[in-house]
Length: 618
Image (cartoon, rainbow, N blue to C red):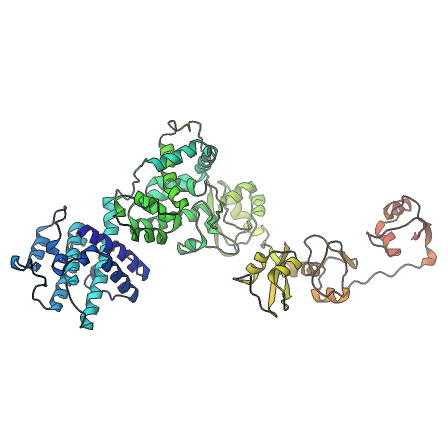
């Protein structure tokens, strides 16, 4: 009965404390040990619900006192026995259906005293005695009737919250001791693990070998970081299950990198994402974040199989399953197994199967496995926005090797602020000497046009018009729904291709114009205007365009073009076009530049000529 009550209160405490935003530490705080925490509205309702479901609450009042529960199997110190003996009713009162004749306030004070005793035992490391004292405190407040006294009701709920919080903290610290060492993962084998072993030895054998080979690149660093954090070295094999040790692996849930962080979890553990870098795919920083996350989960759940499940599908999902369990899940993770999402249910057995293969490769037919050489590099801090290709050229290093060392750089361009760049060993001095001579680079910017929404238009019709996608328009305008846009709204429409940054364009001289431009794939009015140093408005006005829509092969007049004056035709000869002639062959025949022939005859490269047509020649 007592175990069931502890378990109910423990799970309620997990939901209550973490749901209310409290951060629970596994180290006791002597300064706050005597403070009673105020219960929140959410805490009151959840605790009340769990109390109603407790089988002990269906018994008469005398049954729920501490004296009626069977003794626990662990030993209780003389100090606790003495304290409990002072509080227990006499033998003559055992069968009565009322609490001892004490004031309700006195019972609450005694419960608070037991909370303080529990705190003292916890600080000494006597976790079982601390739980025994909290059990007594809880049994005391259950017998207090405060329906007619609001002040006492609040005190009772505050005490209930405090006891819940203390039990959660003690269980978190106790699990590290009871369920195995903090740095040890027990190697399990059961029917679920055997199924995954069979898959690895069958259709997924090539995947396992390839992943194992890639692991040699990153595992040495992971092992060092795990040892420093005091976590099991076996966790260095998690990326094999998560990503196959592929740095840029992307899942259907948008999880990214070796450790498969989703952006929100990555942000929580300090992984930066901006226009220049994405630390979700940085093997070094992502490993640090993964270790911090695993540490947090182990402090909360205490048992490594449950921790791995929470790492895969989130601690919220696992705690929700735990709350509905009828047994103590801390004794056996496999009680949760069938109630977890399918991917997570397979995740833990796959991890155990991986460990079995790694520890005994000959038994499972992996005798020919081979790991790649670990990556080695020097680190240097630079403050210049340079492209890795230019860096590789300046220091005489391989560009692909430099890219592999810095996969987090989205455009292979170093951010403008101070940045620690990884470079191949032996090139540090060379880079320091040449960094100021390497040209500054800027990442490409997406080309956009703007569209004013008209009545009756939808995102799909607008996307078709500009030959883009609905998702691209939604991303560019931060739209949450594709089903609602307002007439008159100005939308930013991404077009195909990229253009240089504005800063780069401002320094670039306009391309000389021949007066016309032939529209090619990927062109837009904005790109064409910037190419020739003019504006979209001027091009539309000169070409009488009703919209920004273009089609391939369309000929546009370019504003600002001043054609050279045509030569005096009286000084030119004429040529009659023959069968098989082309502007090029005619220009070659008369030793003229093709451009000159086209210009004096007011032709374009796409103009057609016909037999018998008269052309001017020089």
